[in-house]
Image (tube, rainbow, N blue to C red; front, side):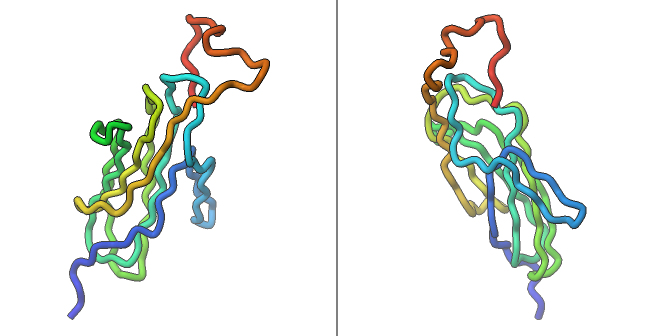
Length: 151
């Protein structure tokens, strides 16, 4: 008897600045992010990507990637994707793109990876205010009419 549905395993999840695909089909994750360090807040991240790869499953699935605020309740952004695995030897690669994500306050944000309402992974994304290097303009010295800084 062949299984009609097996929940897949999450092989990896990587938060990065961009994902590109080579002619060979291989993926390149650019700017892998472990934390966001900025001189001031609020700030808008021009583009954040969550690269996920699913293996060892059979069936149709619903992936949900969520970015949660430091209060651990507020969903800042989410991306839902449907994918299919026809055979346990196959894999599925998904890329969630969050454009223009605004970070209002410092703290530990959380990335959640969920498939069919089953939490597979949660990992922290610290957003930290750091002092500019000596000699650099401080945020208070900048032109208040200038556009807000993007990361």
